[in-house]
Amino acid sequence: MNDSISQNFATDREVRDLLMCSKQKLSKPVLAEIALARGIIYSPKTTREELVELISMLPFDHSEIIDLIQRREHPRRADKTTSIVLQGDIAIEDIRAVITDYTGEVYGQEKVTTQRISNTVEVHVKFDEIDYAKNRLIRRQSHDIKIEFIKQEDHTIVRLPAIEKGQLVVENLIGKIESRRKGTISTLTIDLSQVRVADKRTLFFTNLISDLPEFRLRNVTSIRIAKFPIENIEEDFDLEDPEFESETGSLLAIVQNVVFSGENLTTSPEYQELLHRGFYITGIRWQSQQETAPFHLLQFEAQFEDTENCKDFKYDVRYCPRSSRNTYSMKFKRFQNEDAGYFLELIENIAQENFLTLTKTI
Amino acid sequence: MSRHRWFLTKWPITISSIAEKLRENTFQDGKSEGFVLDRIRKEYLEARFIERIEYDTIVTDPFGKEFSLKQLNFIQSKFVISIQQPGLEIIDAPKSVTNLITYLSELNNFSLSLDSITVDVLKWTHLLQNELKTDIEIESVQIGKLVLAKDILAKVLIKGSGDVRNSCLEMTQNKSFVIEKVQIKLKDSHSSKILLTNTAVAHINSAQNTEIHIALRDSLAKTKLTNSNLI
Image 1 (spheres, chains in turn cyan, red):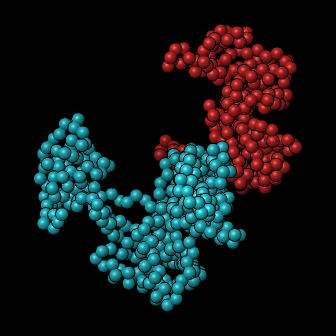
Image 2: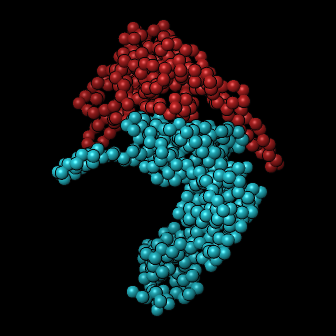
Image 3: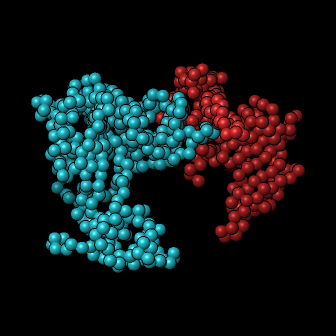
């Protein structure tokens, strides 16, 4: 089908799909408002689906379609953060230069802006993601990601959102820095794939939650655990009988991973039981209270994307301020940019210390 | 008047090493929370968990001017850790014991498992009677989930000036039910009253009485304890 070239208008069906797909942004009141702007009043009893069907039959001109598309667009939900440590002294000028290079390279496709605050270079990359499986009006999704280069004495921390595009941009930038400096840069990421003992993998997380300085652990509300896959012992035997293998494989009930959610999970007997059976933690969400003013309750999340190898570490932090009556609303909000950095750095530092001591003892 | 609650716990380390850890985290000036060890024996230890809470209250005068007052509060929870099951007893617990339990879990390297208890209250009462060697009068009984007919349940409170055991039996004959709470009166010199619940909670309504406290603990340990999640 080659209709996208010849067809320069939106069909009723495309408009219908556009209206249908975003229940939150194009809610019933919003649809009623769109109709009202055209002088049409529908009964309040009309369901959202009926409204969509009715409105999509109306004619839409170009600017009206653009307006609908803009109404539907929603900021991407908050991504977790991840970080890479670049060893060695990299000059801020080098970082800025490669960003300028990158900006030129992607000119027209991505919009790159930079900002330097003392020893930090902040890069914002705005780009569109196009999903060709969807119809023409809803395939474009715009994103804005933030990458930070934080220069320390002998290393640089790169903090980025834990999504594929973030990784790609950072890899590109690191490659450029390497060619500019004419040498490879050794990087450090948290990766427990070499740690093959379940208890030690769990220790990484338990240390993380209890070692936060100036914080008291209050609650653990979610734990993800997984188990090392069962190694197929029979593979070593050269058994000719094909039925033998399939039989043993299908009879076993295998639990590979479990997600717990609740309160005070570390003391729950169910969780303890599974730990004894060789499961290890791959992700955790916990709440810690600040020991000093302003006594925020913080909700941290840390997990490995790749649970089998414990790779691709990502994390997040939200907070809930204390009310004047010494209670918490338990509605956790995201920090404004500057504050988040401080708490993310706490996790980064502790996670790294932990990672280094764990891998040293192998 | 004191309130006791027991939890089913298996301590991964010995009493003396727990005591050592509590000592390392002693409550001191300038700390927001910590422990105070009261008593250590071979089989058990008694300690207190203290939380220091500081906050500002804002008072507005009639002219809209705001004053901020610094408030300071201490919350104490007394607890007993024993090798013998149930393992953990919290005395006069504050509203939430989450902080205490999280702290204990942290001190035990997160290998502590803790569970609430479901207990047969009548059996507990019976064993308590044996333990104290005094007669016990059951003043009131609260029965829950009493099946009257299919899909119809009743919650019943039976009260009387004398022992209500017989009326209770009559009422529940051939029916399915759960005894939730029992209020008993000891026929001793103080005529102390105790309220026992099936979640292993006891309210003692008399001046501090170590004898009753120990009897409660021992009789509970002898009752078959089940972890409440199994029911």
